[in-house]
Image 1: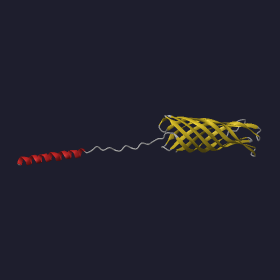
Image 2: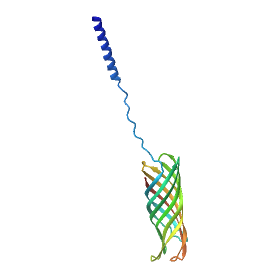
Image 3: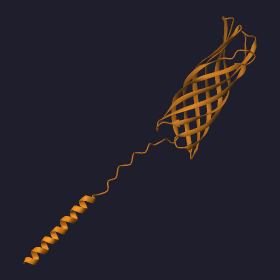
Image 4: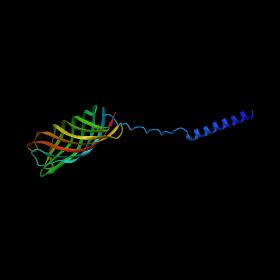
Length: 207
């Protein structure tokens, strides 16, 4: 009986000490992984706004209108792997003008309808080229009095880069060259077209 009691005490001591060591070791603690920041695929509709600066020159006249501009744009992108295809339209107001001797020319508004072809080598970064139709209003004024406005058609080409801030919002920087065909102006007695460049910065929201 005495031997049995000693054996029971010894067994209990071993079990208690083993439990204590297991409690000291515990279970490994894993910190939860941070949720990934999802950058967008570029497919889908978007709308946005832009602001920038333009400068140019009038055909058959020494004036070189320049000034700030800003407007809105909307478009759609399709992405296939790292390649992005799209179409975009924009409409803008402009303060570009210049007075030289008796003449003043201004470009109060313009717009474009363009295709876009780009590459997205990294997630959330897009580089693209763009080109298409351009249309604008041009106003001529002589001696601060007689004025005449015409609408002009032309073409545009350029390129830019767009960077996603999150799955919905992105920012972009863009350069465009625009060339408008000449039209006859009665107040100047000559045909005038308009070639202009612009650099602009914008923001887009994707649906």
